[in-house]
Image (cartoon, rainbow, N blue to C red; front, side, top):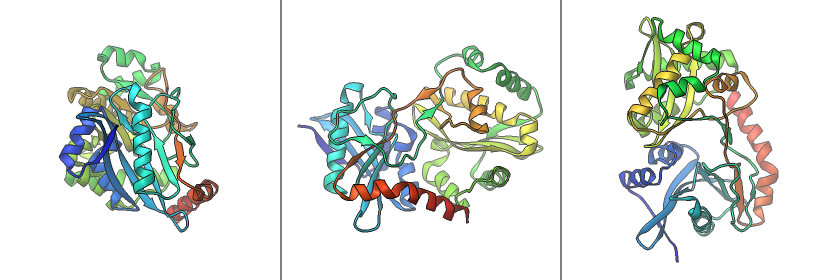
Length: 328
């Protein structure tokens, strides 16, 4: 019999995430960021006796009656090995059914596209949050191999930017507002909505500089490009990024990407996830850094009852409404 236990100590939870090679979105601090808004974070471990097989940070949000609640696991569950995926997932799903209830649970694991879960009632998700198509760079390779894997144009821009006058370094807490000013310029130029500045400050406060480093490229002591990361002990995950017009002209985003990889390697991280690929200009920029793409398992749902049909029908419309309200 597998047992499930709840973890309430931040250090103990992050130690488990580290032991399981978990994704940064499974870290305690990320759960706290989401808990400041509409979500409530729960952290559970699945054990066979004294052996931990896996676990999950389960985010729960309230929904209108009669749907009541939705559970969501970003880039999880975490497991010790492939053989544990089905068993751990079943236990986590059963815990959520008994403890959370509501419409069901959405899972977005960090597993290959070819993964087939043997879990009762599992089906394609009504709504996904994270992009399953991405580019994950293997940081265990040496610099020559990383450069060789880039497309020629990106490799040339990296080298050119590194010879220029830009200074690339991590920002301190007192420089976060200057980085956010860059992000506002990027959003205005590209026409996308941002969270309130307080949200990004909370990310930094809850996760800290070690778990949420922000490298930036400076020109004349002013940031012209930045990369905001979430970092576990194994994986760096790009949360937000952008460059001013001046930064783009000086290829600051290329120097910044390369330096970010160097810092992650120095800290012992094994992979760097560029966080999603679409058919847009940003994705084409990302594709320049490698000749491969990574296709992760698509989001899946496990319904808990008949109210799931209401959620499945209303999720796309609700998503469009949230986007419209966020833009207004």
